[in-house]
Length: 124
Image (cartoon, rainbow, N blue to C red; front, top):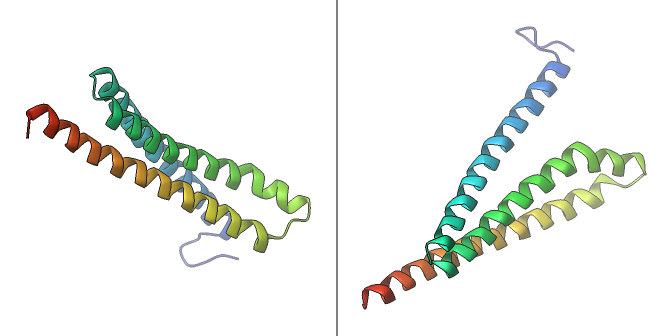
């Protein structure tokens, strides 16, 4: 089937996959930068906020890798073995949502402990 402009469905699917991979790659770079900054915090003796930041960005990175593995490999394997998409899509989405929530919570705790540590160091 060809739409106006000469794009067919396969080309649109290829563009979607390519943009998804590029987006995931950029997110991965951002998460890795966050992990590097968090490790630098730990090295500079700001341990507790750094540990929470590593955990938060680590959870985000895990979530991203899980999503890529799931979408590129596991989904097709489940379909080939007769598993219903109505069963595993909600389970995967709930799992990824929960991991994202934990990552956000860890980063919020990192911010709060960072502010508290700074105030204690200043004697406020």
